[in-house]
Length: 235
Image (cartoon, rainbow, N blue to C red):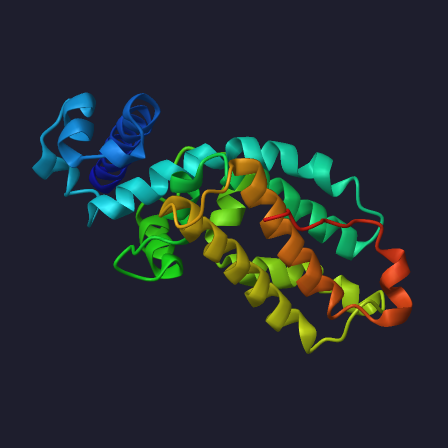
């Protein structure tokens, strides 16, 4: 019974700090994310927050997850547009780019920032502690973050394209890694203002390079079956 009460209290405190962190992001933006602001909003001290999170980046990481809801809600409607695995995969990239470039710093925290450990280990650690209430998100979002490796999920998604005779098995891993690197490169470019792209231009350029990467591995006789395309912007 004593251990059960401790678990309930620990989960309650976890939620207090995550709720406060989410509010700080909504009110001040993720650039102004500090442990003092979060602790004050939660009604506790900064040192108390560190009893539940090893590092500020961990709290930021989990709070940022809550801002993926819009993307996950819209994703099914994008997938429905595709008539085969490759088309669905391209449309999934379109949805991801739409939402990630609308909130570049949020998605950078989730997929690019240094967390002091690899995301899979971080998630496993926190999930063991707070397995009954990971971060207050629906089950479908929990499923995605517990399989955090974006490239791995991407590879699993496009795997049926091999059975559909669009590409060879050996192309799957390379394609999933390459397209993720394209997105990360553009995201880094936008966040650091290395080029003066608008949000729409960043989306268009990323989708163009993703599309070209895909078409390079599609078997020539199957290319006519892909009725999705993206064009490069004029520079």
